[in-house]
Every structure is written in structure tokens, then in C-alpha cells.
Length: 199
Image 1 (spheres, rainbow, N blue to C red):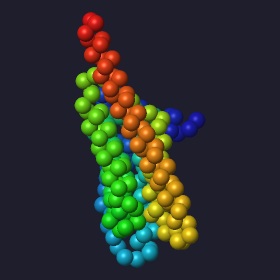
Image 2: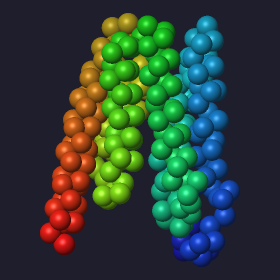
Image 3: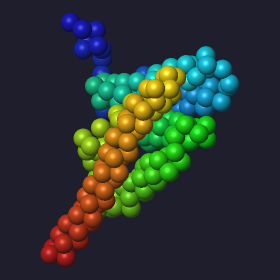
Image 4: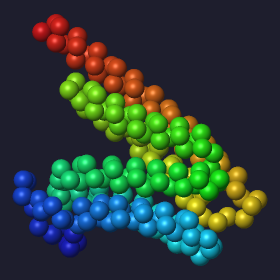
């Protein structure tokens, strides 16, 4: 029997705050300023270090969610901190790349405005219901991470186009899913209003 399968599950309502999933989330928050520091240190070795920190942080984003669900470690802290850590990592990477002149500012602004806008939209319609994360939203996150990782890795000049292609795909899916979430929010609000008026 797998040791993970035999590990005791905490009882509902008795999940410790500092469980493994939340520790990974907190470590990702700590890695963000470390990543930014490495990006501004002027030596190729630090660029590799920044790339490594970004990849490790991105992996923890996947792992902590899986652990929280499989081991019943979901907490209010995790629900709030996990998306904050996720957006802090990708957002800081996009801003730093633009500050270094490696990524167009309009791309960074478009992605950040979309992320902030959808987050605010979710809060605005929370009284009508929850907009669930879609497969497109998960694909968006994966494409953003992959595109940023390619930008961070010091590729030779002839291969720089790979980063641009990956970011173009990430941007397209980011904007498309943003529009889909807006449509869902409008439909959710309309359905609830019609249900209320008919009741």
C-alpha cells in the first residue's frame, strides 16, 4: 500500500493552518522577491538561478493544490493565499521582463489588467453565485508559465522567437478566457435576477 494512501486524513474542520499545502503556498510567496532579486543581478549565473526559482515556484503551485484536495487540507488561508501567490509570481515575472526590455509592456499590461479585472468581477458577482475555474483558465495558467519560463531561460538569439510564439499563445488564451468569464458573469447575474423576479 502506498504510504500516501495510508496517511491519516484530518477531520473536517480540524485542518491545521501550517499543513504541507499551506507551507508550500507560503514558500512560493517567499520565492517571489528572491526571483525578482536574481533577475536584477547582472551575471548569467543569476539568470539561471532566477529561472530555477521560477520553475520550482510554479511546480509548488501545482503540488500544493493537489495535496490540499487529496489530503483534505483545504483551509481559508489556502483559498486566499494560493491565487495571490500564483498571480504574484507570474505578475512579477512579466513586470521584470518588461522592465528589462525583453517583453513588450503592452503584453504585460494586457495580461495584468485581465487578471485583476476577472478577480474583481468574481467578487462583484459573488452574491449571485461562484464563477468556476474553467479548463481554459487552467490552460491559460500553464501557457503563461511556459511562456515566461522560455523568456527566462537564456536562449541563443536565433531561438528567441520561441518565447514570442509561446507568449502570443498565452496572451490569446488569456484574453479569450477573460471574455468567457465576463459572459458567464453576465449570464449568472441575469439567471439569478430572473429567478428572483419569477419567485
